[in-house]
Image (cartoon, rainbow, N blue to C red):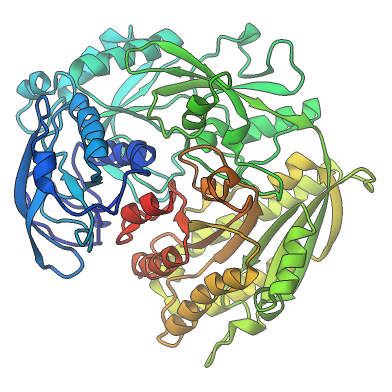
Length: 625
């Protein structure tokens, strides 16, 4: 999906939109348009691209309320003016549906864009219609606008009404919003914390009647603009009561010993405890215990494991409160529909709970191993052997761990590898004290990262020393070489308190295809960029590079779908991400440098991470999908 390429501090001429310091739209439609783009990725991924431009054909079509217009547009790559660009201004959801059918019938690509700019180099040899959402309306938006001429449905106007409508008992307040890392900020949102299903349903019906939009927030660990827009409703669901007997929020599904019902608001720490107590395990999950498994699934996140799909692929049922306030149930009886539900980004409504397929508990043989960058990344055969002969492989490179002073050769640095295999003949399992000691080290190191964040961003010259010191502690004390045996949930969630220290995070997924020379090229880009920036005493990449391998996904909006054999994938993918401390100078530019190169190699961004400001990213996603 082309267009909407946002640069930090970029100024654009517009009367309805402002831009914050990350180049993200500060208006009522930012997250809505972002989610609208995601929802249409699947619909338009198969539209023909090889027809000549015949805009008159599309102009003959009609929309109920929207309008087609020929306009000039400036190309963001070179500022050249494009003459007679076909722009459509839909006003309703029905307009969008009609536009989708009309464009598909006429062989047009649909692209969203900013009101002043076109997409980058997208007009040559292709048939495009650009969609401008400035005039898009939700139900009763005009009515709500009468109450406030500046922004429709402001919190001052609606707060009391909301509380009355949902029959109080749940807290509804006007407050500011900031996600975990700080990339998404809102001055005012209507924050509601419903406690019952009825309250949630009433809130959704009220929002529909008033033309308000709703987004949910768990622990707010997404970086992308997935959250509530300014002056809209933000729902927190940790206080939502279940309808399970006894008020439980996690249970075995009635009649099953492997399918588990999980309420929204439950976090991974709760789910981990349930797995350990009942001797079952989810095949894969993210490391963090603070985040909510429903959110992990909804945003298309991944775990690790050579034969593992994404967490969402193991969901067999989901109950969602739709935009009419009705509780709907979706199951694998309709598998094609379920593939959209499993990673839905909130597009179907508010998730009430989900049922997820688990396995009987496995014992894991977990090994910590250290090799050099040259041994791991510059020997494709060695990397292939490590990855394909083990169940789970995670590789971590902490740049500058050799404490370079004058020159820098990353080949000499250490790489930390965490290798996990399931075993039927385990040794002695780790006692409770082992995890208590580990949690204390995790607490110490994460607090140190929080305390050192300001120092690393203000006095960047100490970055090599800080990285070297931290890595020595990790290698010699926290994760020394060796093998241990533990229950699989402990192996999956092997680190605590990660959420205490906000970080920047850019992550891409690639179809593996057994091509480990390509993997080396992907890593080489990071190595070259790091060395180049080091030569200028610049450290935009200052925590770690992480790599993980897994099978693929069948969920439509999970990036791992690029490895799906049914769609021409190889059956395996690998994720690679880079992390830096929050507020790192030059981070956005570093992301753009990496993102552009990784897209050339066929990579797909993780849709919940930082990527939406990378030039050409939306268009690239559609091409890869």
